Length: 324
Image (tube, rainbow, N blue to C red; front, side, top):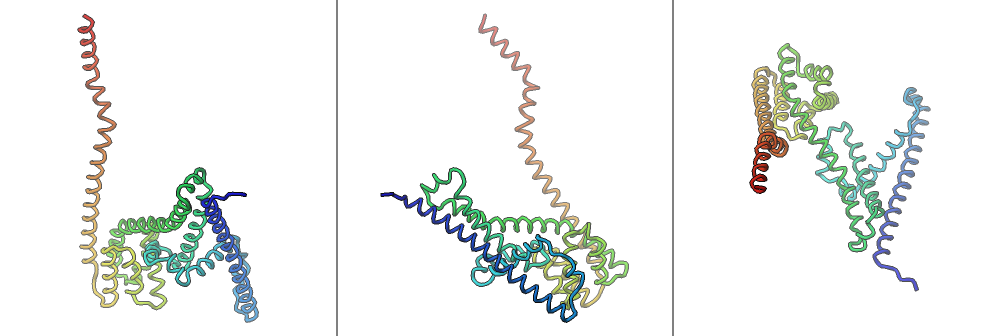
């Protein structure tokens, strides 16, 4: 009779479950894409009969990349529903998505959920076929699958954390120039709307992050939101007190009027002084780090150059004494 090791049976069962999950994922994507295609076809037929379709959009062929994005978005939207979606996208992950600067947050959430699910299942299955994993599974069953699942679960979150941190640093670097532009444009007599439109339109290259956020704020204000509501995304999502203060100042001037050149001037001076202190702190830390590098690299060479001849003479003298 054949004897089967329980650990091998468990390993193959896990691999089969992972393969079945991937197969179900592919079938689910195919079905959802088919439903979306049928719905789009019905909408086109109805719009054509009603005479409201746009010829340019319908004449443009849909590329394979766009079709894949639509399928991925639909699958992510299905996964985001219910308690399973709350597990895949926690409150902290939603905050990271808000801080990452995506214009379409709903689409970004769909992609995040899809990436987390596919990477978790895919890496959990892939790690079982890596070289040397069979010995590890013999001692600790399913440990490779656990590490693969954990890595796939955390990779999208680490990417968002890196992106959000980079955008926070960029906003802190762009804020002094943004304050100076506000002060100058307000000084020449422009209104708040004209000032924000000018910065968003003409200074997008020098203010990439703040310019993109201003574009969203201007669009929301044009759709009927108040000035405070349109600037809430910029003021609250990045955790920068200085940005929050500037947004509140813009809101107050927009509601009650008044001059903001002098407050912006004092605020800009404080920001530049704070920036100077931060640079001094970085230079001080860099000096301490370079001290260790100099000790490890330059000190041995310096000892060899300065004391090398003395050590050679000492060794020669000792050799003569010992030989005499």
